Each structure stands twice: as C-alpha cells, then as structure tokens.
Length: 169
Image (cartoon, rainbow, N blue to C red; front, side, top):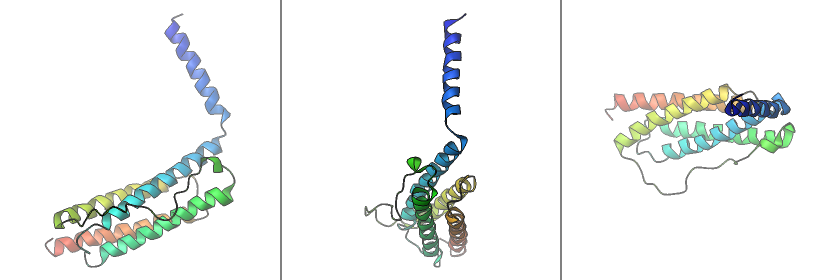
C-alpha cells in the first residue's frame, strides 16, 4: 500500500473522530456566536464610514447611522445574552460592547467619495443582513431586531442614493 494513501486515510479517520466528538449543537452555537461577533465588527466599520461623509442626503445618512447604531446595540445585547443567559456555549462567545469604530480623525470625504461610500456601505449592510439571516441562533430576539434595524438603514441609504441623483450630486 502506498504510504501517502495510508497517511491520508489515517488523517481522515483522525479528523472524523475529532469532528464527531464535538456535539453538533456546540458547533452551531460557536459558529453563530462567531458570526454575531464578526457582523458586530463590520457594523462598527460601516457606521464609522458613514460618519465621515460630506453630505447628509436629505437626512437619510444620519437616519441610516441611527438605525445602524440601534442594530449595533441589539448585537451587543445578543452577545451579552449569549454570554450571560444562554449557558450553552459561553466558552466560544466573545463580546465587543456597544461602541466601536475609529477614534482617528480621518476628515470628511468630498462629494464623489461620499456618494461612493453610501453605495459601498449599503452593499456591506446587505451582506451583514444575509449573514445574520443564515444564523442558527436567535439570541432572545436580538438577532431579528438587529436585522430589522439594518434593513431600515439599508432603506435610508437607498433613499440617500436617490436623493443624490435627483440633486445632481
């Protein structure tokens, strides 16, 4: 028998036994918890991006930021619920808290950069919504509340894009 083939079979058996030794629920919760933390960090970045744009787009940018901050608060509450009340897999839960983003003074973007930024951030938010919708864990309703807030922010950014087009930005 080929030694490489024998090593490959041994490695597969070892990996299979390791995977089978972890309960399925633990993998799902850890994946959900990791997903929650990942979206939280990305959401912090989206808020930070929008805070450095030049235009307000008829109030839609500020409304989107407020919706995203509400979503961030819901994610922080979901993390706290997982860490304090779930008691299933707290070992794989990391919390980041309700604040984030950058404290660096990056300045304000010009008009073209602001327009592109609104479009890019809307795409990020759509991806984050998709991520959370595929999650296995509800986190006492906070995940759905965060999704709803992000959908409201997405609608505000679509309105901001339309405002920019209608005003020749």
